[in-house]
Image 1 (tube, one colour):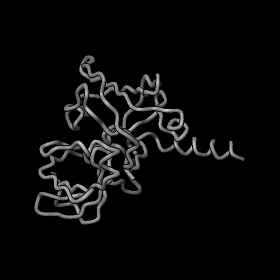
Image 2 (cartoon, one colour):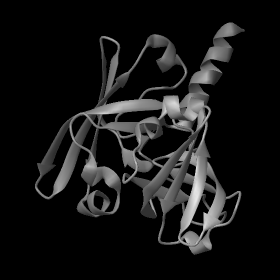
Image 3 (spheres, rainbow, N blue to C red):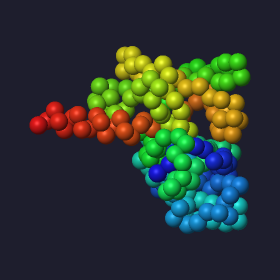
Image 4 (cartoon, rainbow, N blue to C red):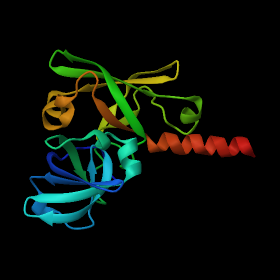
Amino acid sequence: MFSGIVETMAQIVKIEQEQGNKHFTLRNPYTEALKIDQSIAHNGVCLTVVKIDGDLYTVTAMQETLCRTNLGEAKEGDWVNLERSMLLGERLDGHIVQGHVDQTARCIEVRETEGSWYYRFEYESTKEMAQRGYFCVDKGSVSINGVSLTVCEPDVVDGKGYVSVCIIPYTYEYTNFHAIKVGSVVNIEFDILGKYICRMQELNAEE
């Protein structure tokens, strides 16, 4: 379980294909604090540490993860956002993020707005997906590349969902949002509370 507050970024230094899986080796400022079997969110994707070698560590993504997230398009040299799992008793500064990415979204607009940054994203949206909680609400929460953000201007038009977020300079500098441009593919995880509500409504309707 995560909060969507990115701790740092790590650079992918090696990608190895093994059948349908990919092994990602990354360099991270706090690798010495990691341990085998630890869960870390990479661009919002929860992956398990399987190897540690000095300042490098390795995680493995299966085919389902590669197909559903932007890790399938990741290249050596790319930077990913990192967050270690939450500690009980700590403040929840973002929102509840599972590390289970729902789908990818594509950036369709980026602009600077008096020191901050505005991004708009487009993602696939159907009635069935919305009934499962795959949608955004104004002033709600959404995780994009593992970053907890406040939703603005949500919309659904002709099978496409749209969501905008605004990024303060600190977030722009210390996450990989500064590398996102029009056409970039990002990971999106919708609010788990909304998914539970949608599921409860579905079950009540079946009674």
